[in-house]
Image 1 (cartoon, rainbow, N blue to C red):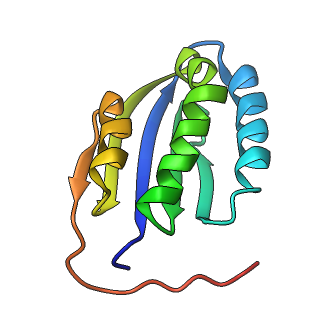
Image 2: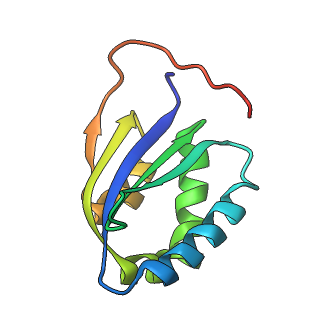
Length: 122
C-alpha cells in the first residue's frame, strides 16, 4: 500500500457528449490495458448517463506519471471537451512530480492511514 497511488475522479457529461465519450472511453481502456503497472482502471456511469466515476490504481508514482503523461498527450483534449470534473480524490502519497501533473484537475489528497487491499485477477 505504501507506494500505490489511486484515485476516483467524478465527471459530469456535457450535453450531447455521451456517444463521443463512450468511444473515447473504449479507446482509453484499450490503451491503458497495455500498461502493466496500472493495477485498476474501472469506469462507472450513473443510470441517467450524466455522471461518471473513474477508479484508477497505479503500482507507483512513476507508473502513474507515465499514464498521466500519455493521457495528456493522447486523450486530454477530447476528454475535457466531453466533461466537467466535479470531484477528484487522490489516495496515497504521490511524488512531487505526480502531484504537479494532477494539479490542473483540482485534486484533494488523502494520505495512507491504515488498512490493506487485495486484487484478484479476473
